[in-house]
Image (cartoon, rainbow, N blue to C red; front, side, top):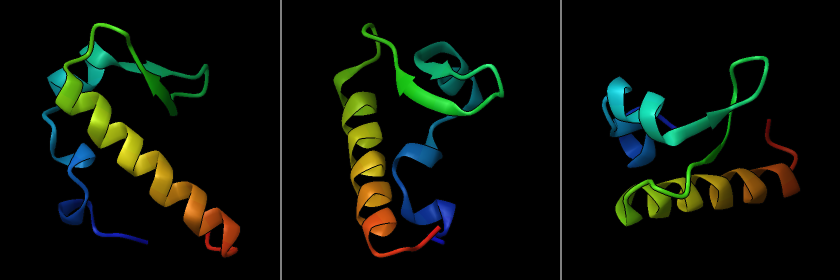
Length: 60
């Protein structure tokens, strides 16, 4: 698992996370809203890419 300090996405304040993230019914972040700033969207895209790579390697 990556340390949160190494992920730009997880450095955002909780207020921004609540405002721009899309959550599942279980409280998991499943995406970002269209009105999110470009930098926020880029950070989320990088997080998703890392998750896809790790999933392909069998890392949970």
